[in-house]
Amino acid sequence: MTLTLFVADDHPIVREGLRAVLETDAHFKLVGQAADGRETIRLVEELRPDVLVLDLMMPGLEGLEVIRQVARRSPRTRVVVLSMHANEAYVVAALGAGALGYVLKGSPAGELITAIRAVASGKRYFSAPISEKALERYMQKSEGNPLDLYNTLTSREQEVLFQTAKGLSGLEIAKCLFISPRTVESHRANLMRKLGVRNQKELVRYAIERGLVPSEHPPAAGRQNEQPKLEGTR
Image 1 (spheres, helix red, strand yellow):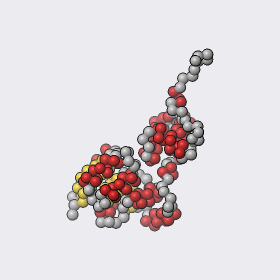
Image 2: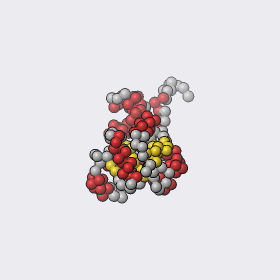
Image 3: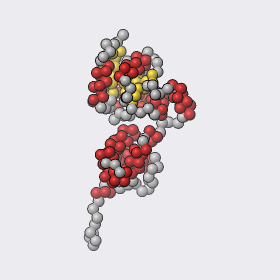
Image 4: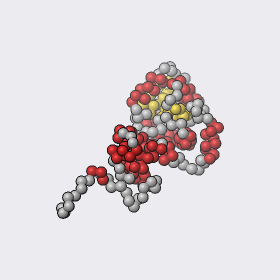
C-alpha cells in the first residue's frame, strides 16, 4: 500500500532533506510541498494526502492553526509535527489541535518514517524524549489552560522582546545584553515566528498587550533616528 505524503516547512534545505529521506521508502509518495501555512492548507485540501509532515513554526499561518484547518478540510489526512521544540506545552498543544505524531528535528531519519507509518494506521507517535505518561500528567495539570506562547520563549528571547518593546534599536539592545547586533536580529526573527507576528510593530503591540511595558507610554517608532533640535530654532 502506497502512502501519499505532503511536507510543509519554510526552509527549502529542510524540505529537500525530508524529500530525500522519504523517497528511500518505496511505499511513500511525496505529492506536494509548501513553505507557508496558508499554502499548506490550500494544497492539502486539494491533494488530500494520507499524512502531512508539518513544522510548527510556519509563516503566514502558524502550525497549530494549520493542524486545526487541515482536520476540518481534509479529515482523512493525519498530521506528524516535525519540530525543534521538546517542550511538553508544544506537544500537548499540537495534540489538542489534532496532530497524532510529534518528532524532534534532531531525531534519526528512520524515526520519521516510523512515525509516518504509525499515524497512518491511526496510532500516536512521539520522539523518545517525550513520554506518553509525562504528557498525560502535563495535560491534567494544564487542563482548561490554553498554551501561553510567552512561556515557549527562551530567557534571552524574553529579554530581547522587553528591550524591543522599550523602543531600543538592535544596536542598543546588543550593547545592553553584550551580544552582537546580528544575534539580536536572530532572536527577533525567532520571536516573531514563535509568537506568530509579522513585524516589529506587532511585536511591540504583543509586548504591550502582555503587560511587559505600560500601554500609556508606548515606545515611539524611529526614536533612535531623531535628530536633536538646535537651540532657538522653531
